[in-house]
Amino acid sequence: MVVLANPVLDQISLIKSPDPGDYLSSIPTIDLSSSSSPDAIVRACKEFGFFKVTNHGVSMDLVEKLEAEAVKFFAMPQSEKDKSGPSNPFGYGSKKIGMNGDVGWLEYLLLATSAEPFCESSIAFLRDRSSSSFRSALYEYITSMRKLVCQMLELMADGLQLKQRDTLSKLLQGNECDEIFRLNHYPPCPLLQGFNCGLTGFGEHTDPQIISILRSNNTSGLQIALSDGRWVSVPSDREAFFINVGDALQVLTNGRFRSVKHRVVANGLKSRVSMIYFGGPPLAQRIAPLPQLMEEGEQSLYKDFTWEEYKRAAYKSRLADYRLGPFHL
Image (tube, rainbow, N blue to C red):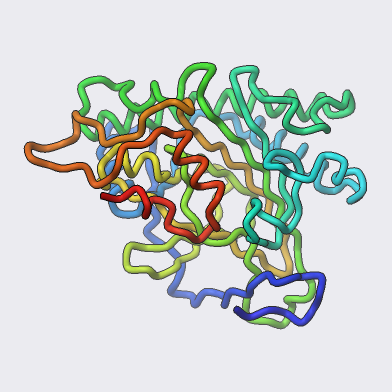
């Protein structure tokens, strides 16, 4: 691991800047208003485990409103932000990601969401009257994400030719669903100026949930791993949402869909703010390949487990660990 000789950066590793040819120029882009979107989504999930959507119906005014509130929070004095932490696992965190030694050049807010729509007990600042505009923007945004994620999963079901459109979407509906919302801020790092590299903002990992929806400001940094192991940068797009297939969806499709490995690289000049909605099922939900997808004689690639069992295992792992490994048959 390469590190900068500066104690401020701890042991955050450097990542070489991509060559011009390492940008993903043919990123799967799904127009949700198109009749061909179900088949296009299935192709993208099989090949990349990742795609972006346009004509999604989410108000950009709403998106920018929440982003502005996030920027306002991260611009607060450190002493004020620290009152909302440390994350355990929810709340404000800086540099440290999780409880197992992972670090990155970022600060973040991690919130548990519910039908309320969020567990205010998970983070202190949301109870502060001065953050009422933050709460309002968050409520509207999460409500929009719930609608979008259900639309996405129903289009997937159409593309997979499942008889019941809600086969997947019903897993993320109801008060017991396990949803998480994350706001990440990757600040500029002047110490990187002159280096042909970036800092690890968020290390390589897959998302354990069924699906996640990412939106970021107009700053690059997201990278995904292709099936051949190459890392490629994803150009930013303020108007679109990026969709990740999670580990649980890979299992539900018996490996037909690929849980995408991704990471974020922070640079020295521009601040990056991203907002990620993670859709997880109820803790007691059994995660196993859907019988409707299994061909005659096809065997499950995975042991049966509940979402709670998998979530517990994921929390005990490092970011880069292959979390599905112990659950393979």
